[in-house]
Length: 190
Image (cartoon, rainbow, N blue to C red):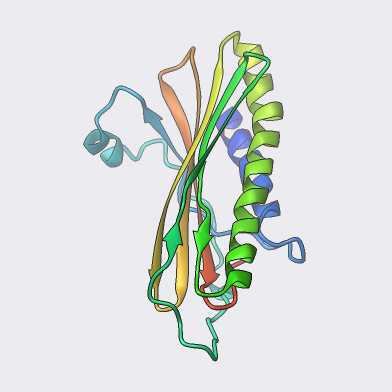
């Protein structure tokens, strides 16, 4: 079971890393992956660390934010929902951001990353989640949500994907952190 979770996690990380920037192949820093129980209160799931698998991050490859223009202090976000079903075997429900910043070009660059993420998550659901659901004779669910904050000219977006199956109580949670220069739209840590 742990091998299967590790393989699924690796597949999702590879897919989301591909969405980072087509010109680079470096990994996107990620938070630990853990197994959560759907019926367990949040306070208990946060204290259960027995199934946490830490993923390596390279702190030395972070790009500094260098801007000539004043950094914006606020942004607008219009989240949109994407829902799809794959042959009544997999249900996809994603909430994705659509940002508006001072610079339209920066907004377009940042939003393109999340459009690519949507495509990558659909591909992940139609292959890995679909095949796993078929093997378990159940329905697979892929759900995504995010939170965003702007601090010192850096837009940080934490995107969380929950992968679960109707035959199991536990879910696999994947979290990726995306950081962007809010003036240029350039992805940092990519």
